[in-house]
Image 1 (tube, rainbow, N blue to C red):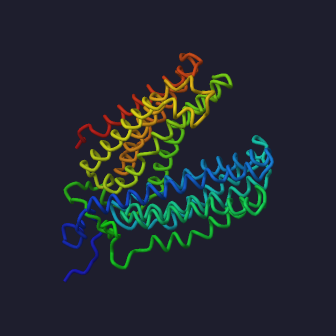
Image 2: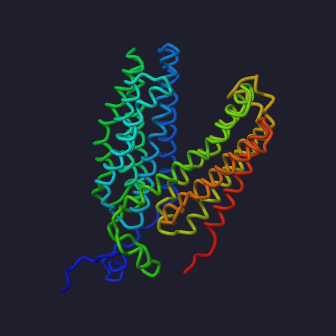
Image 3: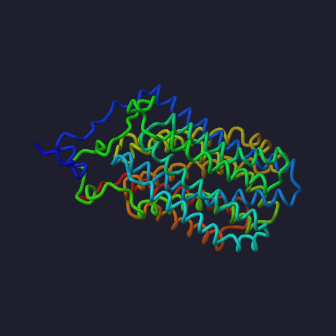
Length: 436
C-alpha cells in the first residue's frame, strides 16, 4: 500500500485523501457570526475613540496632541498586520495550514524595525517626545504579529473565535492606554501600558486560534486541513506547486491594504491642503459620513473572504449585492437626514453643507465596493490587485490640484467620480471571463 503523503491539493483530491467540504453554515449561525464580528469591530472602534476622549480630560493640550499623533502613526504602522491577516486567511481558506509562523514573525520584526528607524525623523518632524515614538516599536510588533492568528481564524471560518480574538486584541491595544490615563500616568505611561498589554495578549490570541478539538467552529465552518476542497479541475500546475505562504503573497496583501488606506484618506488630505480653514473643517465633518458608509458593510467582506479565496462566484455576487444594498440605504438616509447628520457630527456651523451629505455617503459606499473587490483579487492570487487604486489615487490628486475648483464641492466631486470609476474598473476586472 502506498503511504506517501500527497504532495499537492490536486493529488490529495484525486487520491481521495482530501477533506471534503463541510456543510455550509446555516443563515442563522452565519448571522450570529456576523453580529459577533460587528460587535467586536464596534468595541474596537469605541475603545479607539475613548483613548483621546479620556486624554482630553487628563492631559495638557500639548500632551494630548502628541498622544493623538502617536495613535495615528500606530494605525498606519498596523497596515502590515491587516495585510498579513488577509494573506494568511486567503491562503488558509484555499490550501489549509500555511506554515506562516516564521514569516509572520519576520513581517512583524521588519515593521517594528522600520518604525524604529523612522523614530528619529518622526520625533523631529512631528515634534514628538522620543520616548513616545520609541514606544511605537513594540506596539507595532504586537499589532502586526496578531494578524497571523486573526488570519488563521478568518480563513478557517471560525468567526465567533475571530470576534473574541478581535475583542482581546482591542482590549490589549487600547485598554492599556485607557487604564494608564485613568491612573494619571500621562501620555508616556499610557502608551507604555498599552505596549505591555499588546504583547501580553499575543499568547491568548494563539490559544484562541488553536485548532478546535471538535474540528470546527460553532458557526458551522470547517477547520480546513492541508487538503482544502478546491476542485482539481480548477487547479493549474502553478497553483499546485507550493502550499506554503510566501513573502510575495504577504507583500501583495500589505500593498493592497496600504492602497485602500491611502485612497480612502487622500481626499481629506487634499481638502486640508487646498481649502481654507472653514472649508477644510467642513470637509472633515462630511468625511465622517464617507467613513461610515465605507466601514459599515466591511463585516461582509470579512465573512466572505474564505469563499472568495476558493473562487466562489455566488458568494462574491451575494457579498456585492449586500454591500450595494447597504450603500443605497446609507445614501438614502443621508439624503433624508443630512442636516441631522451634520448637526450631530459638527454642529450648527456646518449645516450649510447638509445638501452634500448624500455625495459624501455615496463616495464611501462606492469605496466599500472597491475594497471588497480588491480583497477578492488578493484572495484569488491576482497580480497587482491594487494597481487600479494607485492609478486612481494619482488621478484624484492630479485632478484636484490642476482642474477642480478650490471648494468643498470641487474636492468632493473629484473624490466621488474617482470612487465611481475605480468601482467600475474593479467590477470589470472581477466579472470579465477568465482567460485560459
